[in-house]
Amino acid sequence: MDRQAVRTAWDEVSETYARNRDPNGSDADLIDELLDRLGPAPRVLDAGCGDGARTLANLTDTSVGIDISREGLELAAETLPNGGLVEADMVSVPVAGDAVDAVTAYHSVFHVPREEQPAVYEEFARITQPGGWLLMTLPGGRYETVRRGWMGGRMLFSTPGREQTLTQLDAAGYGEIETTTATDPLGSSTEFVFAQLA
Image 1 (cartoon, rainbow, N blue to C red):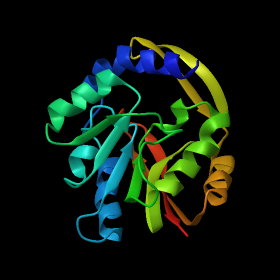
Image 2: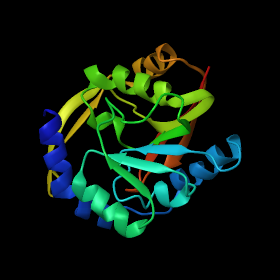
Image 3: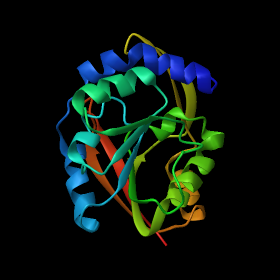
Image 4: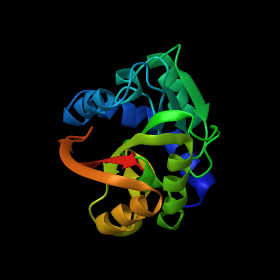
């Protein structure tokens, strides 16, 4: 699936995904842990924010959500009517360098083709201040597939695997990397990574 096909796919399933996922759970609790690592009134960018219930709703008022799907952003606007929301692609984030204190990317980067994921991590590093943090889902396996029937539509899932993802984060400038396991929005156990920019 190319970028436009992924955008269309998310537009088609955003409402179903928002309805089926639990806005609470241990991966939502990781947001509190992230905020504890940041200073007062941090600026956080949520990449692939979707409806915003899982991440943006738990972040600060100065946070911004980006998503490739206009439908997802419309749902986020209902959840967070005063939130900063931008339709954008993670490969080219329309934010100035060193503009944010942290980036969150929950269940989102693996919807970008895996050959483009190093560019995503470089973008996250570019917009984050030195010493800032990234909190994201860490994929387990290595695969690239289009799942038909996912949430009533079809969706790209793409990852080079856990170890390659950690290597890509290191290459993008994330020096300190910690992992933890939490429950994802659909009830599965998922690994997450806290990565600090050098």
